[in-house]
Every structure is written in structure tokens, then in C-alpha cells.
Image (cartoon, rainbow, N blue to C red):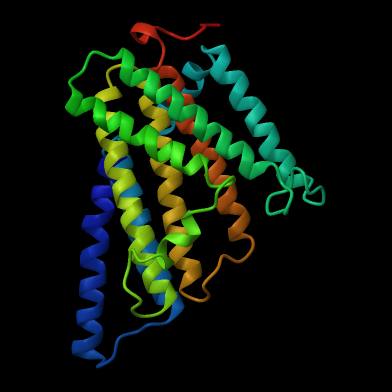
Length: 272
């Protein structure tokens, strides 16, 4: 997934620069329409997907291997099936506040927070058990700290307050401040995740796959937010529900991966 993001950056930056240069040099104005913004955002994504698929960095065979390997671990398989059932109930039973996404009394955010909390605990256990230098373990502990901080959000909301408590000067509209704060946090989280993957990759190949899924879901969220904020400073439906589902899936993937790497000696977990 790291290579995918690198390819995406190598395609997205030149596309934006060249598009702006052509617009100014030939048409004497920059096209700031919403459709142009979405094209600049998503065209490099599909190009990067094609490039990485041609280079065999992902494919159906890799996904089918991950599914087969997951069902070799009963704990992970049962948890994922139960988690998928809860997410499905949140979609089809959207009139029941307890399970519906977006409901004021919904259990979905609490469930995602519980998964992030457990993942943080498992990563701390993994850092304790693996034989690695402190310079390597600190990335795993850093990822655990991020997860524990995110798990506190439903209990003590803090993410929404960050742009307003002095981290960024009061310059420009609110969307600009949000982009600076949350964009910076996203970059930090991805760096910590990639550094942790480099340490944990040899401990469990399947765990590395789940951590790649974390990057996929996080990247999808990072695309949805600016696409919405370009028009309004909040998420509209159905994007709000999609983001909540992606957040829950991200927590599921990181929990599965952290559980695998926390096992003693990297041995298979409860094989079927």
C-alpha cells in the first residue's frame, strides 16, 4: 500500500501542476469548478490502481489468499463475521437508533472505539514480546497511542476541537484550518503506521495484509472529506454513513492485525 500511495502522489502532483499551468497559459483562468476538483482528486487514484495491478502488487489471487488464511484463525474469522453482521444491521435497520449509523444513541461509534482500544492494547503487548530495538518498538507504541487516543473520542470528544484551540492561527475559512490540522494528523498517522508495518511485517504476513487494509480505508476517508468540504463544511448523506462504515472497518482491520502480531512467537492463532 505504501507503493500505491507513492504512485498516487507521483501522478497527482504533476496532474494538478500541469492542469493549472495549461489553464493559466492557454485559457487565462483556473477552473475551480467542483467537477474539476473531483477529477483531479480521483483520476490519479484509478491510474495508481492500474499501475500497481499491472505490477502485480495487488490482485484477486492475493485477496483470495487472505480470505483463506483468515478462516484458518477461528478467533479472527468469528470476530469479522460478527462485526460484518453488526455493520449490516446498521445499514438495513436504519430506523432503530441503537444500531443505525448516524443515530444519536447509536452503538456503532462505541463499537468502533472498543475495537480501537483493544487494538492499542494488543499492539502494546506485541511491542513487549517482539525482540527489536527501542527505535523500532517506539513506532509500534506510537501507533498504539494513536489508537488509544481515537478510542477516547466517543467518551471525550476532542478531534473536533483541535482546529479551535490554538494549534493553527485563525487564518482563512474554517475549512482551511481543518485541512491543515487533520491533513497533518493524517500524514503523521500514516508515517507511524508504515514504520510499524516495517517492524511487524516479518512477524505475520496476514497481519501485514490487515494493516494494508487500514491504509486503504483511511485513504478512502481522506478522499471523501475534501470532496464534501469543497461544497460545505460538513459531511452530507450518504457520505456521512459511508465514512462511519469505513471508520468501523478500519478499526476492525487494525484489531485483527494487532491481535495476530501480539501472539507469542508469531505462531498461528487457533488454527481451524
